[in-house]
Amino acid sequence: MCVWCDQFAGGYERWYFNPANYARRLYKIRKEEAEALGAEANPQEAGGMAVLGREFLEARERNDYEAMERMKLEAEQMAWGTHFGQVITLDEALKVTDIMYPISLLTCACRRSMVGVPDEENFTCRGLGPGRYTGERWPDTYRGGVHFLTPDEAKEVLTKLNKRGLVQSIYTFGTPFLAGLCNCDYPDCASIRTVVDFGVRVLWRGHYVAKVDPELCNGCAACVARCQFRALSFAPSRNKAYIDQFQCFGCGLCATECDQEAITLVERASLPSLANVW
Amino acid sequence: MLATITVDDEKCNDPLSCRKCLLICPTHVLGLGTDVGPQKFRETDPNHFILRGVRFEKCTGCMDCVEVCPQNAIQVSF
Ligand code: SF4
Ligand code: SF4
Image 1 (cartoon, each protein chain N blue to C red):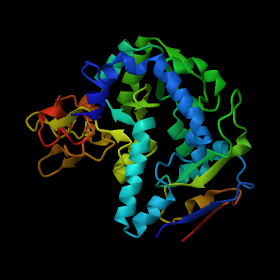
Image 2 (cartoon, each protein chain N blue to C red; image 1 turned 90 degrees about the vertical axis):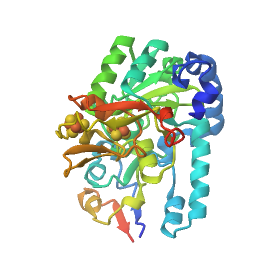
Image 3 (cartoon, each protein chain N blue to C red; image 1 turned 30 degrees about the horizontal axis):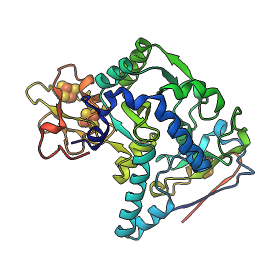
């Protein structure tokens, strides 16, 4: 069971299908929290979007597993209360555009911080909810501006970015308030990088797991470049794509690229050994 | 071994528009931040952007950033 659905789905199929989690009331709470946190709440100021600092890397150098474990837990607890994400499929992201309003197009703070991507090339994030009406107050956080989208425009952008190979993920800003719908990739998404490199779950796996049908797979390898989570490889001896389902985040990027329809997404909950792997 | 990366902020005065080192680093070790908090109603001045080593665990010591920097602002040591 996904603990976020358990706590926040409110009778809906997923917690991110529950309109209450996009509500303005929660935005206010998060605003007070953010102000109380002060400058520390600014990821840019913290520098380069590092969730774990040098201390953690030093502990890792000296194989101090106890210290690493403690810092990992602290980082996760902090993230889960304030700002973390979960991978969702394109279909789920499209559904979100129909249940909440407004949706805006923003530049990606991670890519700005990681590689200084110019604003005009950096519109890969959607801001969700009323918080973005006050975007002009924080020109630096919203460099490039806040561009409101109709649900159809939002669907078009999401579909285009999926085609480009970017993973859909949804983020809280003061859990369970959902306010970010991003399109991410390794290595310049801070959360993909943190979860893939260190196993710190600032990004949760999604509700699906991808599966290759070896009968249908013709060995074209078109899917292989799509996986941002190191779950998908190619087995030349069998001439088939191979998915490590324990590593799969269920983004479905591989499946949308396969024109043989050889990759399907199965419910994580239907697989006893994976049902609790998030 | 973990690299130590130091940046002379006086020399590196507009990393957001220069970003030569950010683009050349093969493992994306470097990152940008600012030395001021978010300010209401104003964009951060370019000279308040700062470059830092961030993902030290991935630094191979190739020195590509040191060499590409037109201001000689980066030092990498082990
Ligand atoms: S895209 Fe489809 S057919 Fe091609 S290798 Fe991948 S699973 Fe097989
Ligand atoms: S195997 Fe497919 S669904 Fe799983 S993480 Fe990789 S691209 Fe996403």
